[in-house]
Length: 164
Image 1 (cartoon, rainbow, N blue to C red):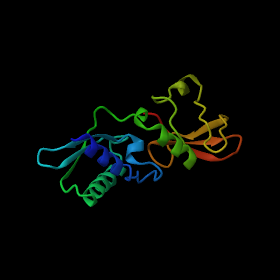
Image 2 (cartoon, one colour):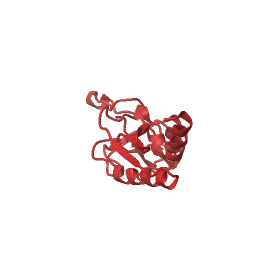
Image 3 (cartoon, one colour):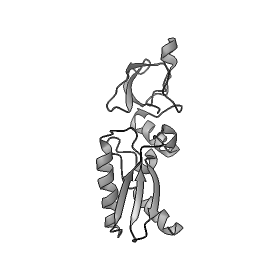
Image 4 (cartoon, rainbow, N blue to C red):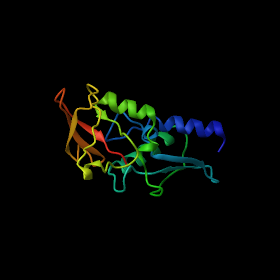
């Protein structure tokens, strides 16, 4: 694909928001893996879900098709690829800042925390007051990709976007 055309499509994809976290675009999330011009003049967008079975992916696919078709790309193929698996390392720094501003603690590190096995729970920075005097209340928050924490200083509960 001509570089200028690919950039135009990436810019359009920055208008597709995650239905579960409406301050993040699919580009912020890192779920867009590639954009390719097809021989028939169409466009293929490859996406990887944040986890297999993510219910938001169907809506994301619909929104990708809609924004591209509204902007003159009539033939749009959206392909879901599960390997390599999505990781929070693919999330943009801008996206992590948006999460924190929205009240969700962004992922810290690249893997699931195993310190709890040794009696040391991970201390996540509170997105409201920046304290690390926090504790996990539940491995499961408002969605499967988040855990529920509470800050012991400001007393506010908050979601933490778990590392994958």
